[in-house]
Image (cartoon, rainbow, N blue to C red; front, side, top):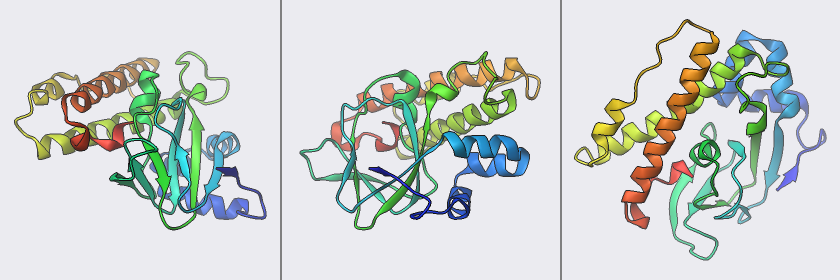
Length: 216
């Protein structure tokens, strides 16, 4: 992967590209200063067709959003069988990032160059530090993660309604707190971790070829 330059992608072009990502889009409309800050710390990179951009076993501190092009998911570098696809507007790396473990799959660029935005989790992991990103922005971030994980689990449940872990999904409490409060942030943080742990358990219960690839 290579960092983009102003010649490759002018700032206006990147602004249009991130409109496909809910988190960026929310900040564009709610807080332009926080949006510009997010743009300044995000890692914008490109990768060429056939390039492996994530290796199974890599660290998982960066959350990636494809903005252009398609990515293919493989169990590891040596197995060419595609077990999933990642398209613009989706994200990958949520579960591994939250639970701080290695990537469980390899990611390869499909047949066209890709453009990705990456967000380092260090900017959001400290729930008491609002010197950079505000309380509201951090709440929006963790709400995005919770929605992504719950959507993945709900999709798994629709595919396998009799899976023994389905009842565990119902046990994860909804977040009840004052809107935009520190309490809401902490409860969202806890909820994302509970959802991530459940998704990890679900994946581990499945045969390798049936695992939910979105979760690595």
